[in-house]
Length: 308
Image 1 (cartoon, rainbow, N blue to C red):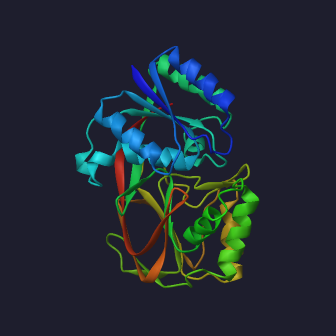
Image 2 (image 1 turned 90 degrees about the horizontal axis):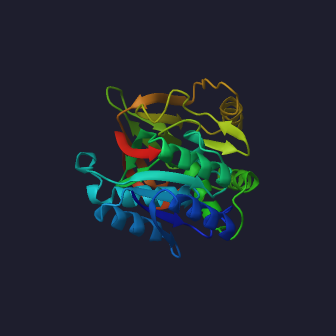
Image 3 (image 1 turned 120 degrees about the vertical axis):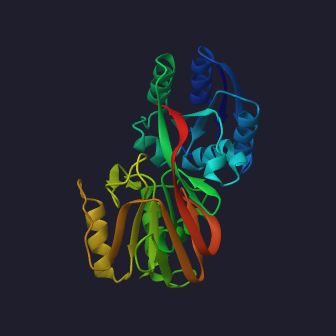
């Protein structure tokens, strides 16, 4: 088996020692090349080349941003068309970021040494899993995408990239974005199959659940959403403080079943279209993509093989 290890040395918890241990361990089972990324988009370029060269496995060692770049690189030649997905390398993940949402959703340990052991064991026993992905405006996402408040938060955090992206940093960004939204609160019109258009002020589109974590506490918005189902939609038509507090409390509950008259929620959708009255921030897997007035979200079943 030919494999490439893609390491983001700037990720929160990656170290030279951990990289060396991981590389040495992988090299005992596969023919391995190691690439350290040194610019935004580098991991995507490496993964795209790996897919074109017929590499069997690409292992991402970094945070969710690194994983997202690798996934988009592996599927780059599909040009955003699910029907064009051909034979692509399998994906392996060894967490090295601060949140590691995708890895946690797959049951991969947040400890890089334990995750390395899990990966080696899965390779030895030929164990893998097919996962569905989301596709939004040509961008593949593994766990979440969204428009509005959450994307505003992501944008604020991105401006502090020199700092460790802790739960506290996200909380402060959420509070600031709530009281001082950078682009205001343009109305969103949500269209889903078989239903009348719905008005909202912020929308989260999930590919799995939990959607994120507050420290070790999982945040549940769409408990019925998984890598084997369609997309989950969680949207709020009002953002008054009582509404926000109510749904934050429900999201942090162990077995959340979100309810509320301002809530629009579905757990298994094949497609979602969201139009904005004015440009709003748009994020994919916790990275700000830019501003949009329309985004279509598609669920793509069995898009990728993950070694796990």
